[in-house]
Length: 320
Image (cartoon, rainbow, N blue to C red; front, side, top):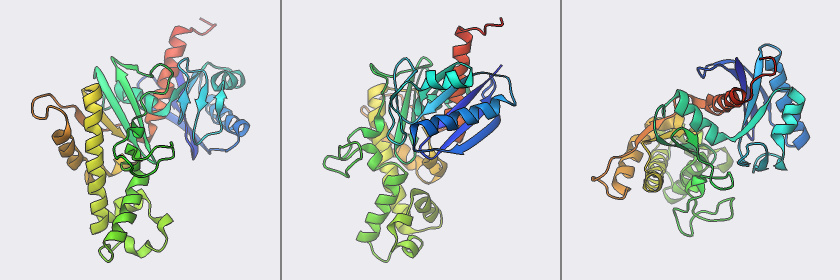
């Protein structure tokens, strides 16, 4: 039996056929449309494309948005068209197999628990650092969603009073200091305060829009002083944020995922040191292991496919 996982992001819709071992056997991909109907058409297309080549029993969607606790509807998605939309039922009717929804960070956390860096851990937190920060919490292998399905929104913990404004309406949120977007913003601020010290980023300084987190990380690898300071700032804020996470949840493991995690050698050791020094009771308590994700960009779709397999397990196929 195979299932399909679909990672529905703001830029692309990525689908994969996944077996019971978490292996991705086949994939399909398409750009993410801005219109609600067109988005669902795209999901149906990629699932149907894979179902034409494999005997698919169910599908799971990993969505960058708030998913209701019954995992049938999307309440809100900042970069997608859905608003209080019964997505699972609409897609299931069109593709002809059961469909389940999950928040993308929750799906990634589940995949890392079942097949990756959090395997076997009783309490595990996944922090996905990309454009912003997404997070998932697993307790005894089960996703914790909170009372209404939106927990844990760790990226919007307020680390810096009166700090950088955030799209959520607050200021000083963790993701405004620890994300790919934040890394670029920090580098631009540092270039303004220390003119002439950048050797790589200075070449594009006239076009701030071209300074991205990925470009800053590349400049840091090339020895750019400003970029390296920006990475050091990201490490500091990551460590401080993780100390808060550990104070609240006391996890066995914290898995760092998302696009920024690909540059982990530039910041993760420093972040661990900040974490160790900032945590309450430093030196007198066990510390969570901080690991990078093992499943990479596939974690969301693997987790969604694994959840779909769970649905099939409790709802046997009529042919049985």
